Image (cartoon, rainbow, N blue to C red):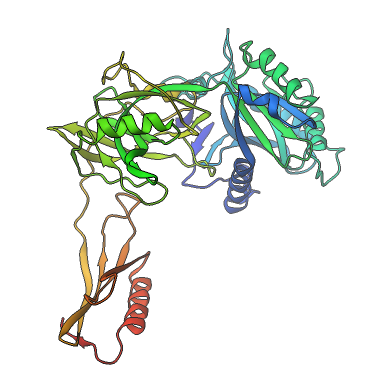
Length: 484
């Protein structure tokens, strides 16, 4: 039986709620989500080779455990676990038995941040082990579930000061609170000075197989570094943009990995490559254009030109993430390559690659579900149902709710301004769609830029009509005649 289908753990409708009932859903959900968001904003990714360059200053170094961020909640004599995404684990499992035994030492209501993971015999924990231990695909192995605390949002050891602005004080409080625990402990932390000492711990803990990486904090916790070995993956080029330096160079390439059923999933783009490689790619890719029902833009708004999936490259990354800073899944488009064209299927949970750097073209590999397998991302993060076949999402047809056309003749030339408001009818099926869209077109043939558009979105018809009324009031003055 899955742990998630018992009373010991349950997803709670998009928010957290204490089994004891004294912590409200909104209070606890806001607390843990805001904490995760604030921590994620301080993270700076490093690879092993960059550790030596850290400043010569006091640092707090801990092994990075490959699990998921959860929160241990002490509420009176009760203790339970909560995730930022709304799951709650309570009941009689070993890690919570230890927590309830420690509850009497807690300083009032305490919310403790930490890493939930599954103990593994022979080797360090892996994030996939946690899903298995919690019964994601069968019987739960609750005796393997453990929690390593690394910070307290509120509360802590009973003799600690009520407010602990210094991170080291909070860590000391957690060490005392969880003293003697087997499945419940404060994270192991070493105080060192400078990057060279941190690099030695990397060799000892990470290269020695005891951790996924290092978490390195400045003494004031203002900066948190995540150091991991660099990751190399092989992916297919499925599109490209031109360089801003000129049309003879590639700006960046769009990358996709292949799922077991032959579908592709976008994982991101790579623009960090030598000039000679930009030139070489342009020569190859400009003759490989194909049609695509999917559009993908880079950070500057330039659309990628889609190409046949024939070239495989190796890229080096600092990290792969499957969640946003708020703990929500990162959705990526799944595509089908058939009949010489790309067709979009639907967005599904995927992964995002961080700081990719081009390494080489992999002429020794071909486009198949082994050489460019999407499962490469599972070495660093957990993605639910990453090899499930994606069915094309059939979306409802949009409906126009307002349409107005105005014209004005000046010196024998007609100018046209048009307002259209439509209801997408798609927001329930795909949250990436807004409920309503307001579109204003301004065509003036005598102007240097004759065609201008403004697009706004709205959650309700009332808001959409307000936006539309504002556009009409601002753009339709004396001399404009309504034609439709």
